[in-house]
Image (cartoon, rainbow, N blue to C red; front, side, top):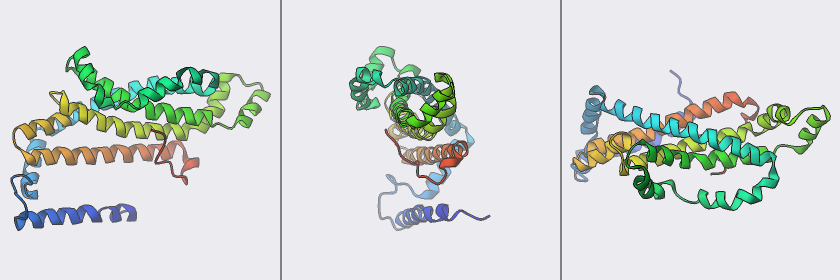
Length: 259
């Protein structure tokens, strides 16, 4: 099977780290109780896969991420479109949104626990807060940046606001919207795991915290590597989807946006 050259080159560094890990464990360069050898981590990984505990925690985390992401999208997208197409509203909300944008979602965990307990609501709200602003500001930027000349052409053909939005504004702003969604997914995944480390009884973050309390560094490593791998997989899948939805932007770099 032919491997993409970019992927192949990207595997060099992880391979070097893995070989160093094997060599360091073999020659006792560190305490193997704190950093267990790959063989122990592999055995623990086989165990949590076989008993289904890893899949259970991942399923819970994914459910929280996608529920919060969907809720944030339903809130952020229409608000950004409304403000982007009615720019005279911006001064009334700009300062408030900028202030809220700079509050880290994890900083709100104590007050959310006081208000809602340690159930699902605080974790869902954390994901919404982490996801809302990347989607909102990128969508707002895309809508506001739409070429006014195209809108004028649409008006000259008798298009109403809804038709102009569907056929002119939305296609022009879609690349920015997708960048915001991609960033939002990444932020939501990181914020959720942080929330699960503090207040949860299930999820991949809870798996790491529980392993730390049980003095199981092998499970901690499994949890950390799983977070990195699944986050990369989600980002890659969304990037491939975005390229199919906006093929006219395929040659442009759209990895980063307004967070």
